[in-house]
Structure formats: structure tokens, C-alpha cells
Length: 327
Image 1: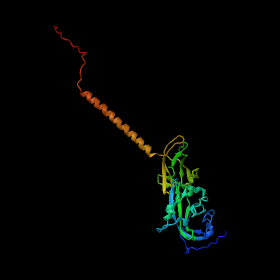
Image 2: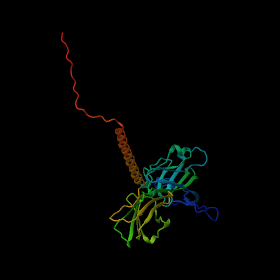
Image 3: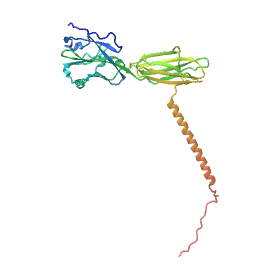
Image 4: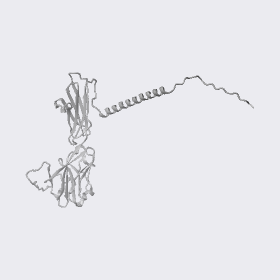
């Protein structure tokens, strides 16, 4: 079946970078079978503003597509279609005949849903469950009338997916001595998207040259990023460096501080733990208080003993019984 298409050029010579062009077909026969997936082949050029939204891995998110004016719709007169902008992958759709969604992409089956009740009120928003890193896409919402295929609503939503990296762990190995280099390793796991890693010289808060670093970033089995960085610097008596992991989507920096002086031994862990230091200080304070109380008790007992009158022991007392007359 041949499709007759009509191209409508966008108005204006220049377009903002956040404008996207979409193609929409105008053949009635195109919608006769759900197997053709409604709008996968598109010909009518139009434009829409891209809306930005953020979600964490594993969470649920709602991608808004709402008719701007208060209105009531008969869902049996509408085609509603959500797709991935770049690949035209079907996310979910609604057809007037209630056809099953057999052509939805496998990665979105049982995760993407539309609400019939909300669509009657003009809310065609997509509910996406259990967000994954692969959902970092542009989603397009298209709504048409089934009678004349006139455009009712069109929205584009760019979803940014993120996951928190673990707190960086800094360690060192070997037994460096004067004149040898120091080797530090920084590791952070299970974050998204790909991070930026920085080593900082805390003596003057300057960035350490990348030529002294060896960074490795890779995707793990969860589809999240792990990062390992090795830093090699000349030996000095006092070293104070930090490792910082930047998540650009979350506008977040996680930093661990490492201080190394004269140390020896293998696999020496140099990451400071503020909570552990606080616990140690608290334990020392308790011991000091107990020691003071013990000394005070000894002094008090000695004073009381010195003030009490001393009694000389005279042996056991004997009680003489007086004879009694018996009648």
C-alpha cells in the first residue's frame, strides 16, 4: 500500500536547538492495522519543545503529555502513541479498537502504561516503572483523532537517568621509602551516567595533573558505571590528597580525603573515617571521666577513715550471770 504524504515546512529560517522536527503520516489506511504501529513511518513535519525530566535508576516516573485546555475526550475517537524519538521504538499506544500492544518494544513491556480515565480528561501522560539506564532517551507523545487524523497533541520529553555513585574509597599499597613514588587507588561503583574523576592536592587545592593518573571507567552487569583511578606521585614526608567523583546529572560531588605521612606495611588503608575518629574520642573521654571518679572515691574514703575515732580491740567480752534465788 502506497502512502500519500504531504510535507509542511517549519516556519522561520532559524530554529532553536531545543526544537525537534517530527514526521506524521496522513493516510487513513496507515492506521487500519496495529501491525503498522501507527506512526512509525512519518511524513508530516512539525516541531515541539523538548521538556526535560530527571529520574533515578529503579524509580517510577511520569512523562507528561497533557492537553492544555480543559476538555473531555472520547478515547474511542483517538489514536495515542508514545515512541522513542531516535529509534521510533514503540513504548506504548492506544487504538480505538482496543488492540493488544503486541508491537511494543521488549524493554517496555509491562513497564509503560496509559490511563484510560485520565485520557478522557485530556491527560495522555506515560507512566514508566522501574527506570533503567537505557531509558535515557527522548520520548514522543502523539495524539490524533481517528476520524480525520487531525493532530490533537504532540509533546517531546527528554528523560535523564541517574544513579548515585558509592563514596570513593582510597587505598595504597607497597612500602614506599624516601625517594620512591607514592601510589594511591580510588574506587567508586554503581553510578550513572559516566562520571568525572579528579585528584586534588589539598595543600593548595589544585588539581593534580592527569598525566599522573590512570583512570578506568566501565559498565558493570547492572548497566551502571564503576570507576577505578590510580595516582602515582613523588614521595614526600607529608601527603594530603583527595579523590572526587562528579555526577553531572545530579550536580553532585563525592569526595574522600587521604593523608599519608611516614608509614610502612602492605595494603595500608588511608581513607579517613570521621565517624570512627569521633567514636575513638568519645571512648577516651569516658575513660578519663571514670578515672577521675575512681581517684575521687579513693580520696573520699581516706578522708573519712582519718576522721573516724580509732577503737582498741580488747578481746571478747564476757557476761557474768548473777545468781538467782529459786523459790
